[in-house]
Length: 475
Image 1 (cartoon, rainbow, N blue to C red):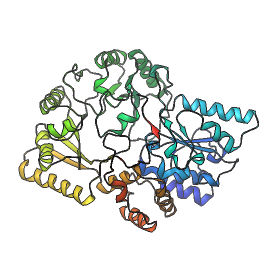
Image 2 (image 1 turned 30 degrees about the vertical axis):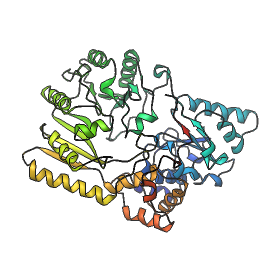
Image 3 (image 1 turned 90 degrees about the vertical axis):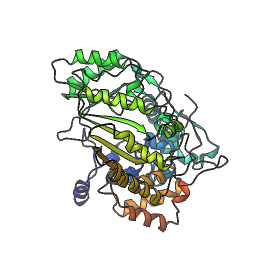
Image 4 (image 1 turned 60 degrees about the vertical axis):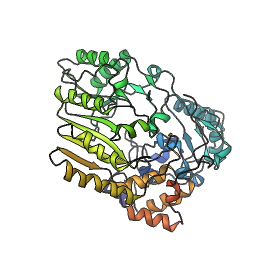
């Protein structure tokens, strides 16, 4: 089931109908278990809306034995504080194995005639990697160990995926070739969440790609991971994909790439590779700042790798940078433009740095909105003044959206009332820039006496963090 856009929501509410499942049109309230994959904090309001439209009480305490058990997982569950009041159980870590254990416990409770919510939740709380708030709303003395999958080749991966009849953003097959990242960039939450780095075998990837194309008819396969360029057998994989799809009109696309000249060069020029645009993530403009992030890549490596790709037939390049990083100076901002001016037809994606939980920067502060706006304006004016001939396009992520995302990612249970009140006011899809309204967030913070800046301040080493009860040590 998916969150409906506002027109469909209005249609459901006007007719008094429930939000239903895609496959069999079953109202959500008739399921035993509902599972949410929480990928982005600004979607929290939509979680509440899905529950309400599906006929499920929004707050956990309002549900009884007739209602589904509501479970959430994904990256946002690594600090569950802001949505504790709405979720019955959180899966901390990877879900392929744990979801089967959840189902078995539910089935077993039903067979034994002990299928009450409390009984099931009590059993779920015994599973490694599951946090059940009703038994410990203040989990500081608790320790929940992150679940991981040891062998990716043994994990289920879907090949018969839903194919929409209209165009969507990621309109292609995505195959995860590697999980985790071999590097430890200080800002990266995904590195910590998905550690340790594990690879799928070339044979398994080829099998998944062939089946996915056969079952869906898609003509593009994306090789997905946090560090696709660092997959140990990437050249072999792409060469074999080239042979597998030769003459079939199927192309392979690559996500954001890490530049590492010490490894063999990516085979950019194979026919199977889709040569539209490449995305690289230098993160910072200067080598000094980049190295302070544990991103040890020299300017020379970036320039050489990208120019080789462009010479191999790629039409454009996108570079991802952050502003507001710890130790950042004005010269670091200038270096973003200076480095990028080495490439033709480059788009620079500029994003505010957010000190996310569980990263090596989790105790750092996030810069104030006005400071970030000043840095944005500096880049714009500096481009016009000093790089007028450079064919660079600046694409800034909404600073206010990033600020609210940071508050939610570092927040605690007190933010639940803010999220609930925004849902009541009709706020929807805050992750879409055309729907985001910063004023309503500010009004809600003020209404409940919350100073959001407290969550964004620098934290001392002695200060307890609300997400510290999650044990990330199984790397």
